[in-house]
Image 1 (spheres, one colour):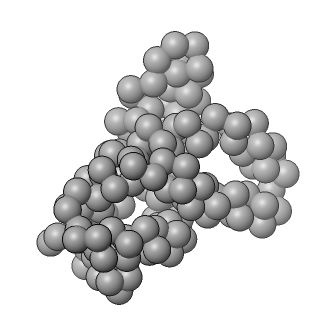
Image 2: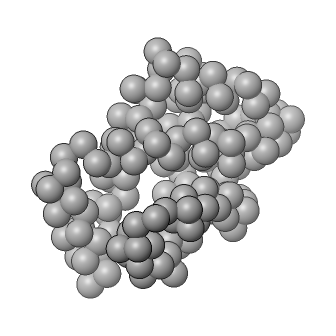
Image 3: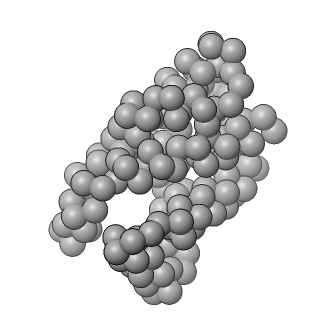
Length: 149
C-alpha cells in the first residue's frame, strides 16, 4: 500500500502535477489566513514569491519525498480501514498527521547549515502545527486525486 502512495506522488511522470497541486494548496492556505498574523504571513509569502519566484514549488518538490515517507503509515492504515476520503482520515487524526509532516521540516531545519533559515524556522514553528492541521483537508484531497489516478 505504501508503494501505491509513493508511485502516485513521486513517479517522474506524475510528480510535476503533484508539485503544482501542492503549491496551489500552499497558495490557498496562505490566502485564507486572516487577522494580524495572517497579514504577516501573506506579506512574507508575497515577498518570497517576488524575490524567488520558483522557491515554493522547489521547496515543495524538495520536501515531497520526506512527506510521502511520513504519510506512509497513515496511508497504509487508511487503506487497511477500507480507504475512502483521506481528508477525513487525516482530519480525524490531526495531531498525529501534523506531527508526522512537521517531523520532516523539523529535521530539515535542524540539518541546515544556514543560521538565518534556522532562526526563521524557529520563529515560525510555534504556529506551524495549527497551520498544518488547518491544511489537512486540502492535503488529503490532493493525495486522493493523485493516488486514484
